[in-house]
Image 1 (spheres, one colour):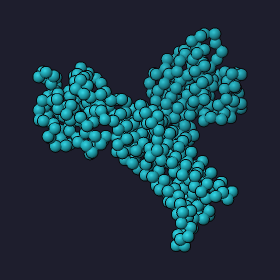
Image 2 (cartoon, rainbow, N blue to C red; image 1 turned 120 degrees about the vertical axis):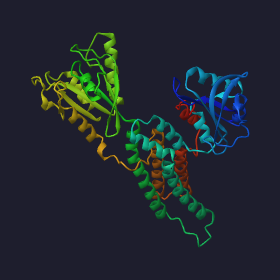
Image 3 (cartoon, rainbow, N blue to C red; image 1 turned 180 degrees about the vertical axis):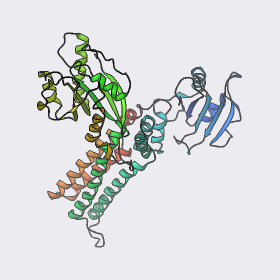
Image 4 (cartoon, helix red, strand yellow; image 1 turned 90 degrees about the horizontal axis):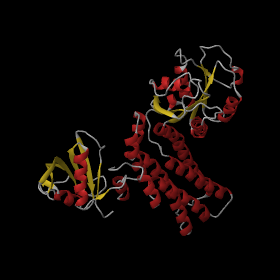
Length: 449
């Protein structure tokens, strides 16, 4: 944290401008050494200054340099941003000069990590920064910006405040029992308070499932025997020829991916190799991948051929997917029916060739995930698996408190579980954390952020 870091903050390539960001106690001094223009050590904070980057009096580029002095910066350290002309050679040369003059190349996410460690943002806000960068839909953008702005963090801070108030009252009752004007914290009062907290947590969790859906999308796999029309369905949903389509069984030997949006939710579509017994080594690897993906999928589109009898292998797949979100698609209804439809629990009929059934498929997906009912106005909920799992863990501590009270355990024993819950809620926003967690979380960020 004592050294000064630098990194390129814009995408590498040809463009109008590139930005190299520098943060640390020596940021202004180091940039000043390679800058020809005003003395950056004496310019006002939050100003943009025109000049040139030079090396041994040779001009490298014409630039604009933004000076932002601590503590009113993203990292709460001095920050300098150098706006150069876009281009790989120019950008790399300026970064090279910074490293030669005392900067260290920043690690992925290190600027945001410093913002967290210096108290500028909490962990939920930090995760929101990354989610904002990666957002693919308007809904995911709204979700991320509420995290960045601290609206989601406030939910957790309010919960922690309610827990600490209970703990404070318990402590007073334990330490000062002789004071008659102190309200006695009875078991019934504690139960009433934790009931209210539990309702709030469960409300946050129920909405957070939708938030996770908005952020991550729905992992959707298309499975079925060879030549049932899986790739044609994928292409029709994507409105592009993403997968190769032929009449030859086994054309798709590896997974083919694409994304579509339904009601602002991304479906991460995966077309898989046709599932069948095969002696072809490459095709058999693709079949194994298809079967493995069943366990990972949020939604399974299982395609059957209206023109063929149900095989033993297909029945086994039906049994395997019955406890997961699935839609059975009977394709090729333009051909003579040979499939015994009474063996299927539910299905939609489709003829990709005649453009029949695609809209019904979209509507079925919306129905399964209640996409039309996802709240349109309030995006103030958790969205990361880390945060949601910790909130669920806090509920376990709450259950332990209730069990302790119902079993007439001493109040100081009940207090231990309440303190554990308060600490777990603190992990969500980063009030308590391990170095390993912080390193792992920020390593997922891009360089320069």
